[in-house]
Amino acid sequence: MLITAVANIALLITAVHITRRLSQSLPRKGAIVIILWASLAFILSYTPESIIWFIQAGDGNLPPWFILVAAYCLPINILCNPVIYILSNRRFKNFVLERLRRTVTDGSRTSS
Image 1 (cartoon, rainbow, N blue to C red):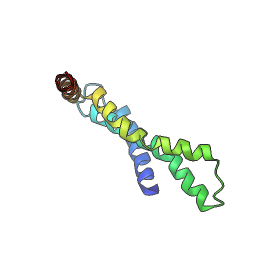
Image 2 (image 1 turned 180 degrees about the vertical axis):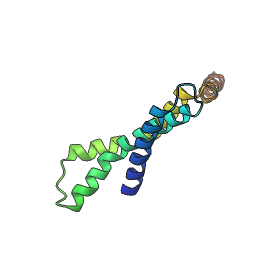
Image 3 (image 1 turned 30 degrees about the vertical axis):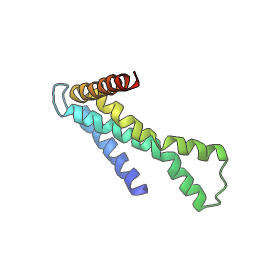
Image 4 (image 1 turned 120 degrees about the vertical axis):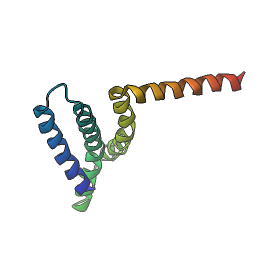
């Protein structure tokens, strides 16, 4: 887990440096921005859990609220990824909206 976090931080720093060097018209910039946001979501979601591991390796004295916050932070990564892709990719956004329309339409047909 620690190796993954360090790799994501390195990826995040590299993406920031590359983004600064690229021009606005370069097509790959969108992919770099997606990687940047996905890495940030990963880091934010797993940082509290990593802190818990380090503290429990020592004296293990943690307030219960921190453990609860860490548990609620874990799904951030899973929840943020679809939002990032919807905001950055028009085709993916259209696909998701079409699926939601079908689900709502099919649900209203079966309930009546």
